[in-house]
Image (tube, rainbow, N blue to C red; front, side):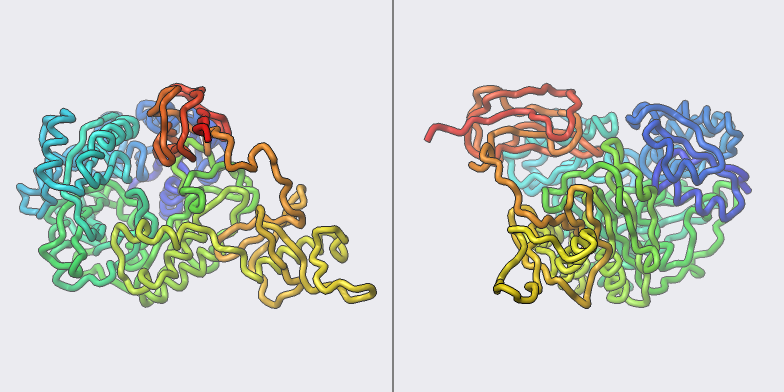
Length: 629
C-alpha cells in the first residue's frame, strides 16, 4: 500500500483527496501558490511546499516543480486531482520516470482519449456509437466553414483538447461561424495550448449522460452506473445527479456496456468517466445515445456516484495504484437511492453570472443537512486566478424527490457575504416544476433564465430580520429619522409596526416583529443590514440612496471592467459606430471569457486598453459617445 501522497492540486480537490488518504493512514503533502499560503488544503496536509506565484502556469501547471516537491518531501506517489495536470500524459510519464507512483490512468490511455477527434475515431473502431461530425486534419477557416455548412446548423465547435466547456461554441447560422470559430480557437489555445477544433452536429434536445468506469492492473473493468449532468450553463455543469432520471433498464444497459467497451479499448486503469450525449426528444432510447468524450480522471461530480454506490472512489484509486485488484466485481456494485450535487460558484446570476471575488467575511454552509466538499473558509479569499467554484453541496435520499427537496433546503440556507454566489439560483433550479418532474436537457437553464437568474425581492421574514438587526444594533428603539415609516402618525400614538428599508432604489416596509425569521442578519460598520434569505444575500439600508446627478441619465458611456481580468480581444476601433449589445472587448477571468457589450447605440470615443493588458475591477476600458439627438 502507498505510504505517502502528494496532491498536485489545490482547494476543494486537494482537501477531498487528503480526507481519504488520512483515513487510510497515508501521509499527505500539499503544494501551494503564493496566494494559497494559508489555504485550508495547505494546513490540512502533513507537509506543504511553495511552488510559485499566483498564475497557474507558473505554479500548479509546472510539472517539474511539483515532482521536485514530491522527491524533496519523500512522497511516494502523486495524485493529480481533477483539472490542472490531471490529464497531461507528459506529466504522468515524468512522474513515473522520477520513480514515483502515478495515481491515474496509463499515459497511453490519457493520450488516446485526450484529443477528441482521435478518441472519436478510436471509439468508432471499437464499435462504440459516436456523434456525426468533422474530425479532419485540415483546420483552415475555409474548410471548417465548408464542413459546418455540410453538417447543417446549429453546429457545435469543440476544442480537440478541450474540457469543462472551454473552447466550445454553438453556432446557429452560417453568418456567425467565423466569429465563433475565432473566439473558440483563442479560448482553446489559452486553456490547453492547442487551438484545433472538431465539429459535431448539434443535438436539439440533448441530455448529458456520463458513466463512471474503473479499471485495475489485472485486466478488470467495471462501471458504477451513470450520472446525469444536463443542467449546464455555457457548457459548465451546475447540477448533477445519479442515477439519471427516466433511464430505462435497456438504455442503462446500452450506455454502461458502451462505457466499459470504451475503457477496455484503451487498456484503462483507474477512475475515468465516459461521457455521452443523448437525444432526449423522445425519452432516453438505447439507439439515441452517442459517445462524446472520455475524461481520464476523477470528476468534480464523483460524490453523487459515491453516495448511491457506497464506494469511496479515491480509496479505489489509491488501492489500484498500489497494485491491488478492484475491491468489488460488477455484480457486487448496486444502486441505493438518489443523489444530487449542486456547484456553489462565486458569481452573480442577476449580473450576467460574472465572477465575484473578495474576502469571505461571512461564510456558512449547511453541513448538518448534507455532504459539503469545500476548500475555502470564513476569512479566506476568493481570487481571480482560479476556478470560481467554492463548494459542492451533495444530498442523498431514498428517492429523487427526497434528494431534491433536501438539496433545495440546503442551498436556501447558504450564507455568504460580501462575495456573491449562485445559491439562490440553485435553489430556484431545484424547486422548478420541470426539474422536479425530471424534464431536463442541456438547455434547461438557458430556456428559463428569465425566471431562474433574476433575484427576487426580499421576503417579509427577511425584512423583519433586517429591521430587528437594525433595532438591536441601536441598542434600543430605532432612532427617529425622516426615513422611518410614519404611516398613521399622530401625536401620542404607538409606534407604527413597520420600518422603511431600502434595497438600492427600491423601498420596502419591514415588519418590526415576525415569528418566521431566516438566517443570520449582520449590521455592517456602514450601517447596512445584510440578511440571508432563500440563498440570496440582501444588503438593506434605512436611508434611500443619494442620487448621482452625473449618472442619472442612464449611463456615461464608460465601459468598465466588471471584474479583474486580462483583455484578450478588442473588437472595435475609435470612431466606429456601434449598436446596443454589440461586443466591444473581451475579458478573461477565472478561466472563462466575458464579452463586454455596448449599452446603447453610439460611437467609440476612446479605448484605453490593449490586448494582453491586465485590468482591475472598475477600470474604464473604453468610452462611447451617444449619437446626437
